[in-house]
Image 1 (cartoon, each protein chain N blue to C red):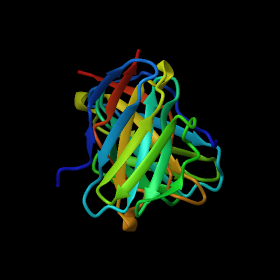
Image 2: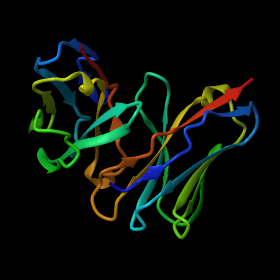
Image 3: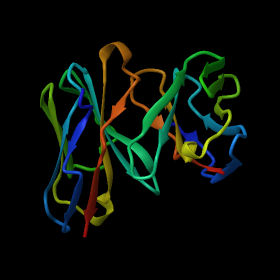
Length: 111
Length: 114
């Protein structure tokens, strides 16, 4: 199966700082890229998706995609303790709609 | 909308028993996905349906696992016989045909096989 890799963390950042989460993928034909947030004991919830190279901003979140280097990242500005969660990167293959998830990065925002 | 509904929320069973997990997708959604999440393997897709038809079941680990979608509002994932290594959280998700990749997850079923 095509791989989606994430650093498991935990990534610890102080409140108000920028948190940077990274993800690499092996399938060069991947089409769509997603970031999900999962609180402990809860289900994943979609934060944002990106299809094209470059940056996409939504509030405090910015997704960055570089298909040539096969990586996608998520920046969280002005991090809040409520952002503490596991962040899952997901990728769709060249064909089909099945999401291939990374194992997630645990983020801890300290007050 | 009530969102994706799964039942039971927790299931404890003994090895060898049959387990049936249930899912009701969001009304009007055309795609339904079953995932399994463990610490070791993360979140894995087991099978997905489009308009009640199974499209890709390559993620189903063994013949002990089976899934059905008899109508647009109900799906089951069955494990028979269950084994301790099946212990995991099983998520169901659904999406609209016009936004297939934007999946909405149910609360999950936490399964423990003793």
